[in-house]
Amino acid sequence: MKVSKGRSFLFRIPEGEEILSFINEFAKRHNIFIGTVYAIGTLKNPKIGYFKEDRRQYKIMELKGTYELVSLMGNISIKDGEPFAHIHVALGDSDGSLYGGHLVEGEVFVAEVFIQELLGEPLERKPQKNGLALWDAEE
Image (cartoon, rainbow, N blue to C red; front, side, top):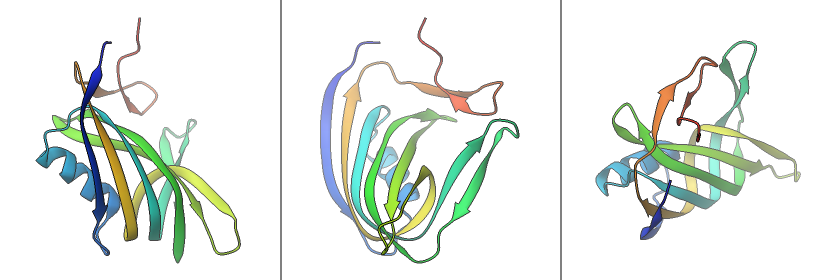
């Protein structure tokens, strides 16, 4: 797949917003169908997931309190006809412990986000036998 850089977006998400929903809506509003996402900041009561292969579903970990958003990285593609952000995070607590996984949700205290749009054929997520919605494999 050939891609080139499109537009770049650097913005802050308002306090109290749910981060994943906000990023998905931002992508939809700006017609971003393929791209990369990065962010730093702080989240309250985040939920992260770990995919359990044997059960074909995510184990959801609910973290209580405020966590430093040490790293957020992911991509934007198409799922069910809409822009869809697939995001992983590393979250730190006040003791310096780190938690990581697939972002399910999190309330923003601070979130500074960078999205790099890519131009090319949009990637579409499709249900797979393993229970995940993935892009077609490169052959």
